Every structure is written in C-alpha cells, then in structure tokens.
Image (cartoon, rainbow, N blue to C red; front, side, top):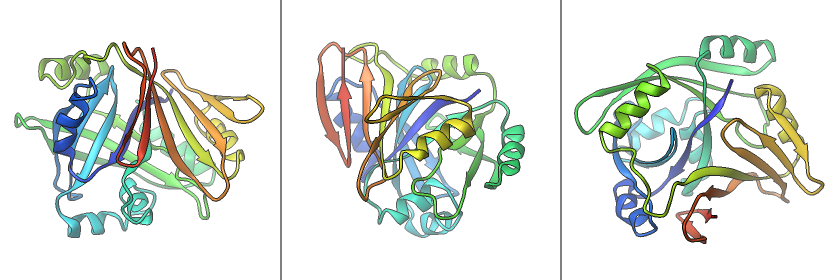
Length: 250
C-alpha cells in the first residue's frame, strides 16, 4: 500500500520558510543537509505527511545529482530551476517488491538506493529511494520512499524533537493535490501503477489515496502540480508560496 509521504517544494532559502509560514499559522522546522546532493531543507508536517521546502547550497553537487534519471533534481533542472512543488513522494514498506513490479510493467527503474542525512541534533536519518519512469512521459511519476523503522516510532521521534507540533492555524491535513496535465490518461496510468481507484468527475479525474486525493485537471501545454489544498483550518485563505498555490479550508 502506498501513502502520500511528502511534497517537494523548491524555494530560494528553506530557512526563510520557517518564519514565512509561521506568519500564515503553520509550524515549519529546520531540517538538515543532503551532502550527497547539495541540497538542504525545512519541513512542515501534517501527521506523517509533510511539505519539504528544499533549496540548493552546492550547485556543483546539485548539477551532478540532476544527471540521475527521474530524480527530483532532474525535474527541477528541467524546469529551469523554477520554484514550486515539483514532485510527489509516496511511502511504502515493500520497496524491493515495488521495484520488481515496476520493472515487470516495463518501466525504467533506478534503485532502491540507501541514503541518509544528519539532523540538526546530530542524529542520523536513513531511508531508501526508488525512481522510475519511461521515455517521453508528460509528467514525472511520484518517486517512492521507505523509511528505516516503523511509522509510529518515526512519528514519536518527530514530536519529541519538536519537528511536529500543532499548527496555530488548526489541525491541518493535506486534503488534495491538484495537477494540470495535457492528457487525462495520465490519471488512469498512475491509478493502475499504484493500484488506486480513479473517479471520473466529468471535467477532471480524481485518484483516491488512503491519506489524500490527487485531482488531474486538463490543461493545454502544461504539466505541473498547481495547487495544494489543506483542510482543518480555523480560517480559510489562499496563498501563493514561491510558485505554488496553497488553499486552506475549514
């Protein structure tokens, strides 16, 4: 079973998002460095799903990592370093079997590969990543992540470290992700690959996941993640953060 794990939102300075999102009623914590990729982040959690505000601290390392096919770094570079939410990550606990299944479906698969980063408190966070895709795809598939340890233990660790706290704006959850696509057939393919139900609403297609929805809307000449909808807000509002719209609903 796949769950939404996080959204990758490239920004100029991740550290600035700690204060910027606080002004919106969100709790965002400093993350750490990915020394192998030349990136660093700050993190805004909604349960175990989160938004990763990510930036570059070493352009040479980043450019090297962007040479790897189907990675978020390649995506960002192909978008000419245009900030915004560029990729979706799905969480699994069967990543080796997932790789075998995707290969059997004819996709090019890279990984699973083990990674780690050092948290601000000095502890080491470890995970595995899997990237996949095909030639001439219109929009990148989500990449797949498997964390070391159980979800329960990871959640408790994040609460204990202060990374997860109640948002002043309310008990927020990532309700829906809107994606503009040239071809709505993308939704059917994603649903088939990840075994999610896809519902036809007439004008768009909605893919039902256990902890969120992804809505695919038709667009001419555009394939991108356009809006993030969060529920549970005390006050409704729509804001624009470095390339992506965020809609807060009650």
